[in-house]
Image (cartoon, rainbow, N blue to C red):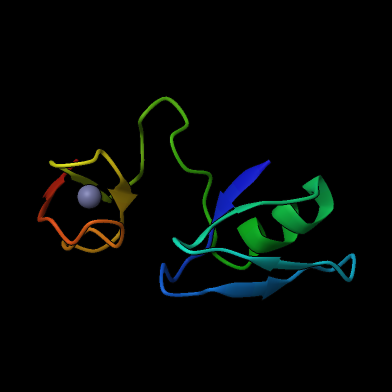
Length: 80
Ligand SMILES: [Zn+2]
């Protein structure tokens, strides 16, 4: 399942299963066990019904972010 790291700048995550994941945008396609662990650590599931609690959404590419500047394309995001 896909999980976004709490900090979009994270480029590498070690899963509890021993797998190592790399990402260019902070979103990881993980083994469910690793995904659950990352969610507990503050990660979130991206693009689930287009909702992200208290987050922002990029006006340019639609990326859901927790910060006002899109970590994918650098555009300004709007509060959801
Ligand atoms: Zn964007």
